[in-house]
Image (cartoon, rainbow over all chains, first blue to last red; front, top):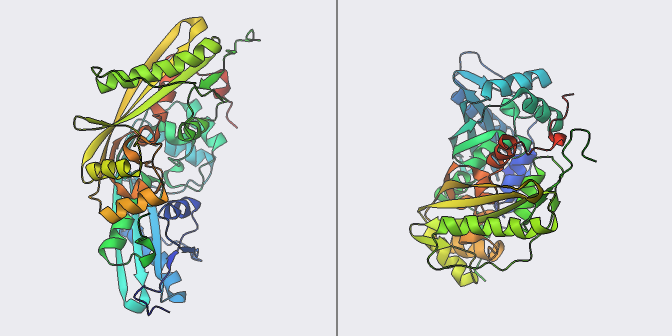
Amino acid sequence: MGTTGAPAMKIILASASPRRQALVTRLKIPFEIVAPEYEETHHPDEDPETTCRRLAEEKAGLVARRFPGDLVVGADTIVVLGREVLGKPTDSDDARRMLQALSGQTHLVKTAVALVLLDQKHHSGFIETTKVTFHPLETAEIDRYVALDPPLDKAGAYGIQDLSGIFVKQVNGCYHNVVGLPLARFYMHLKEHGLLPSLLTIKPL
Amino acid sequence: MGTTGAPAMKIILASASPRRQALVTRLKIPFEIVAPEYEETHHPDEDPETTCRRLAEEKAGLVARRFPGDLVVGADTIVVLGREVLGKPTDSDDARRMLQALSGQTHLVKTAVALVLLDQKHHSGFIETTKVTFHPLETAEIDRYVALDPPLDKAGAYGIQDLSGIFVKQVNGCYHNVVGLPLARFYMHLKEHGLLPSLLTIKPL
């Protein structure tokens, strides 16, 4: 194994998010999913970007210990409106409050990605920021969304790939970053760090 | 029928594109699909935006004649790189040529949307433009994409929602417009023109 010049490692996505899984599938490279058993901790004095990076690293690190020969990828996404970080809403009322706050405003979506390949002592990562501008929203539109596509598992109380796509006036930057993983930058990062499995360079037809 | 204050009209999407159908589904309003039987004509002296609007109107108009009491929606998407309009590639070589041209450059994606409700003499529409910047692409990456996700049915030889998502460095504007229908603006247009079916205003939970 691994003696033909092809790296023997696998890519393991350390995330329970079906949206991230769907994005990585798009790369058409084999990967496995191992959701980390993990409780997020929040430190009051830590700034949001640092927390976001730390959570991505912790998720990747936890899974990497079990799979030291594989490339483990962790990610964390936050929504930042002014000085407020919007996490996952606690309930429908909280979701409506967040959407009311986002209405007519521009916010930032940040996804930190951490890559760990323990056996090669490889630790790398990056954070990608996308600007998203919402149309002004009517209360009835918010209510309809929360009723039809409950966003309780989504930071900022919306999933751009669902009904709330109609709330989004403008995206500046990477769209997939808002879904949960900056696909192009992730691919470029793998490439620049020599981490792309040989599987990727398939021969043209 | 139609006497309870609710509009009796249906929305009909006059498009064979599965991507547009998937986008309209996201609105969670009932709609039907009637693909126009249609041969696009191109006039050499017409500027690209005019052609794009005309094709959207012709698609909607053709179907509207059969369904005069319904709101018929037509759309057309073009990719503009400098002075060149990139249509659907004629074959794999043409697709590779287009992708090579898009590599490392910024291009515009324009989708014209036309709405026709013949019985109410309603004709409206708009055109939405999104700027898309590609990473520099290697020939092997282009070859791999064309082999794995043949883009022959897509203007500009890529579908941002498939593997070619990794080519996209930056989107400025509406992402869904690049997929084939500017979802938010379409919804806003329906709303501003009083065309949203009563179905949409569901009661909050």
